[in-house]
Length: 317
Image (cartoon, rainbow, N blue to C red; front, side, top):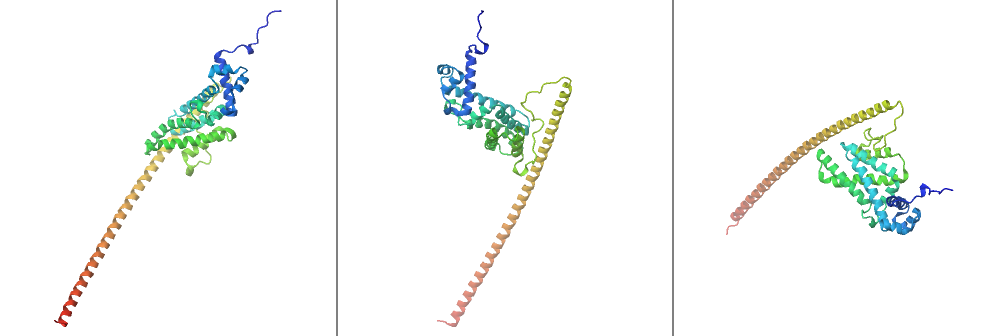
């Protein structure tokens, strides 16, 4: 009988392969049980290795956790950063919301790890620190947008925290419910952030430009390449048209805001003039009152003086 070779599936892993296996196992366990609920023994047993192997690669459970958290943070930050590279403010907002929801959908275990209170051993802080990093990028975007709209750019950090916090908390909620779908949730998020409560669109939707961002290209089918190309061109044209419409709407919004500002300035000027006239009228009335009082005082003084003279005449000494 010839020698039997070892099955390929049981071949010895390289150091890099073993490291990736331990990271993958740790990621799953941390997502399910958290840092404190996961033991080094469990990681080793799941990987079918001894504990010293884990120590050799990572120095302990803390090392595995730090790598897992860092990878997830970098992945999410990369997706958000790419989304914020869009030129139009609305598209930035749409793509950022879509990026977070896509990350949650595709990397649920990673997001579960991030939203837990990260252990100090990770060296990267908690989910709040991740939100802060994303907010710092959004802050730059908002500062430019505020300056263009005549708002105070110093308020950008506060608004960035509000905006990112709203999206992040919605993502945490959606992690478990998963309804409605990703695109619909993003559309409603953008609806609230972009239009505000007083201008909510009852049927919001994501623009054609943002729809399908980050999705792998669909495979071409025989005889369908031209049709797919035409469809892509149509989507692009539709997206450009949509952006032009948004630009027109924003320009109209700016003009209306400027008109409103001018109206308010005129009303304020009129109110100031009325106030000055009223103040002048009151001053004149006060002056007249003082003059009347002075005349009355002088008359009383003359009467008193006359009475004194009469008294002197009637009763000479």
